[in-house]
Amino acid sequence: MTARILSIGTAVPPAVLHQNAVRDLFAAQPGIGRLSQRLVRAAFDASAIETRHTVLTDFAEALDPGGAGSDAAGPAALPVISDDEALLSPSTGTRNDTYIALAPELSARAAREALSAASVAPAEITHVVTVSCTGMYAPGPDYRLVRDLGLPTSVERYHLGFIGCAAAVPALRAAARMCAAQPDAVVLVVCAELCTLHFRVADDPDQILAASLFADGAAAAVVSADPARRAERWLDLDRFATAVTDDGERDMTWTIGDAGFEMVLTAEVPRIIGREIRAAVAEVIGDGRVDTWAVHPGGRAVLDRVESGLDLPSDALAASRAVLRDYGNMSSATILFILRSLLDADTLRDGETIATLAFGPGLTMEAALLTAGVAAGADTGVAETASTDAVRAEPVASWT
Image 1: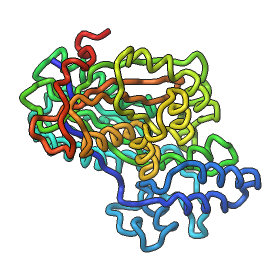
Image 2: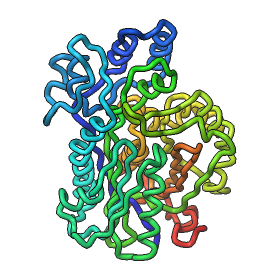
Image 3: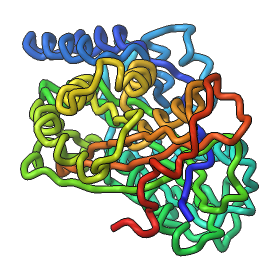
Image 4: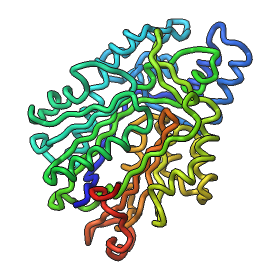
């Protein structure tokens, strides 16, 4: 039996950052040089991002008094901005404490939405797989979900930590393997990232680029191979692949520093992806067709390079570009936001194949080939297609 995504839930903090306002704040910081000011403006203006969400309520309020930040529930997340709008540099410990305080609620909110959409009760969950690279603690996110959602205390728990933006795909692969080994399994996959906790002012181009891209969000998926659990629409997890480039090990890194986690994201990353993408994608797709693309928007340049490297039409990455525009790069959670937009779309067709790509440190590409399922008679807004049997890829249970 093929494991499938039954539903996807998403959650973002209520505080909204408007890209132009964040750009102007970073460019006006005391002590920043003229070259860095130009880099800030260039990076933010080229990002193709309009809005992002953050747990930093005081930061959002300073940029937009009386706006979304002022209505955010809960305590101010972190002292990151002074009265004169100078950005502060909290210690790593302070940032991580904020992650511990705020990430669990966001995770639980996305998970509850996914469970509700799949008509799955918390008591029915057999496995939990959590993902995050923006904070760490023990007992960790997997434990908190058991407690906060009222999951069975016997649930099997796994955590994928510090894998970066590509981590949701390995999490789905792990869920599919669990379902192959235990056909009655119901797996809850939850990705939660609070990237804005690690904002920092620096003349380093890598830090400037990171500040222009990253955002906060969480997403959850319910995965099962039990055919009785299928609703009106779902995404079959048909096959997976991993590729590591010959270079790029130093071009995308994520390490822990004394003043937050430190990102290296050089201009070589899009170029490496563009150069390597065709060979890497061939491993997961083979000779099969692809109807739709779900590509992690590491940045606009990454999407542009994927588009050109695969000779895709200009609208092929529309779903990825829309999520980037409205939410920014939420690291591991982002690809699930894209898949949710496809799963919920009126245009989803039975048998539609979806190539899913995400990129992480290494430089690593994680890929999955999914097939959409739409129940007979379901309202999709388009005519139904023929049976998917003739076009479906080999099931993950037997693919190596």
